[in-house]
Length: 102
Image (cartoon, rainbow, N blue to C red):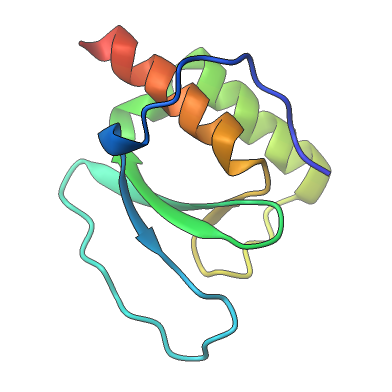
């Protein structure tokens, strides 16, 4: 089950992303720059995105977090914030937030 977010032109190149593999017991630690945080996104395979902390103030991002909390609670098996929505929908949301900040 996932969330549907309004479509915006995808811009994956605007995001810093590193793949994570939940099947591995030891994972590669990737530094997160100051002013950013990591989230794991996906419905089956989780991918790691590093996004600016300023997005936490955006109503559309807050709505996504509220929906995630209501449906899944605060259990985050990856050890970080996990958002179980489609990767494309997340990329569209982040792309729209990037456009607003520029």
